Amino acid sequence: MPYVTPSHPAPPRRRGGRRSRFLSALAAALTLATGAALVPQATEAQAAETQGVEAQAAEAQAAGTQATEAQAADTQAVETQAAPRTAAALERVANFGPNPGALTMYVHRPAALPAGAPVVVALHGCTQSAQLYADNSGLTTFADRHGFLLVHAETTTANNANKCFNWFQPGDNRRGQGEAASIRQMVAHAATAYGTDPARVQVTGLSAGGAMTSVLLAAYPEVFAAGAVVAGIPYGCGVDVVSAFSCMSPGTDRTPAAWAQSVRDAHPGYTGPWPRGAVWHGDNDPTVVPRNADELRDQWTAVHGLGQTPSRTSTLGPDNTRRSEYVTADGRTAVEVNKVPGIGHGTPVAPGTGPEQCGATGTQHFIASICSSYWITKFFGLDGTVTEPPTEPPVDPPTEPAACWTASTYEHVRAGRATTTGGYAYAKGSSQNLGLYNTFVTRTLKESPPGHYTIATGSCP
Image (cartoon, rainbow, N blue to C red):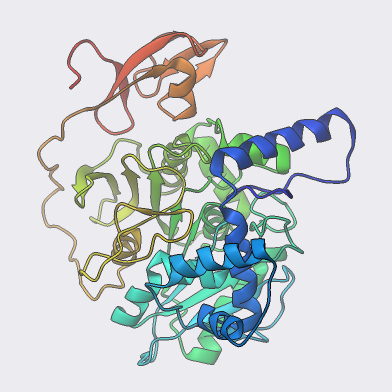
């Protein structure tokens, strides 16, 4: 089977020797861990590209299109998953201007798009397509409800064998170059072709798309007012395939100042306001480990000149997603971190027709939990509500029960609850020595406040 690993860069194929065998084994192990069910998704994405929507593919099959027995089984499985929903209406933009990154542009335009509408750029994960992301993420629900233009950028296997955005390649993650420049051009085209407001442009994406969201916020801070990184990576982590895998797991620990400098170096001399940032991450993500959510927090709070202790905390939805907000002196939330309990790698969705529901779960990496697109739309300020800055300092809600984890020191480091130096593990926040960094030493850690961990001493639930 070719490399089919969700949200991963594609290992190089031309180099021989020990390094090549190591990367091949690593990719194969990750493939087994995440499951081979992504193969039908790739087939679905190709069908969407060649025939437009799944309904057309179904009509072609009914008209007599023949397939091998295995292909028919795959197609039937995909169609069964997709049956409860209708494919989102996407319009391909054939020529949007300079396209150094060789990407494809699609738009979802509400029936009554107002003049001067906001724009949300949406970036799919690896092995996915614009159509797949539009059909499952729930973003189109809120574009139609609130009247903003969705711009979907799509990459191809010609750019990356796994259809990942190349967030880790210097030729694609720098200002004025490659894929980053192509996406910036899509935003410029949207303003001229659809009359959108250049001052109200946001970006969000899943995994590799989330990492590319970080790229765009750093490289084009004057273009993007805000961004939401879903299961993604901080900007400046990874310069090639090997380091990209290390960024994903076990993650890279840097000081907030070092992370912030990476952002400033992306656009030297920039003196304007920095984009606001939201982070969404499953606290059981084995692919892009939860440490990345904390490093993203460190990066963007430092960019905004804020500390890493939240101004206020709360919980969202029936699953008690834990939200931490970092608020500026004028009362605006510059950074927020949302940790979704119990889920792995993917976009949190909540299928249904309620006001806070969205998305579909018939495809890998769209996980039933909470409608992240509802809250992202709200964070972007696109839900029609106007929030006045508070006249009093923010007040924390009642303290939530402390969250506790019992795991080996190795797992604590992988999950971002601890760091490692000199063969020992240290709790994040308190810096308490947890003992040797290995799979045999087990400790129970308590998180209170968010991002601050101490060794539990009988006070955990």
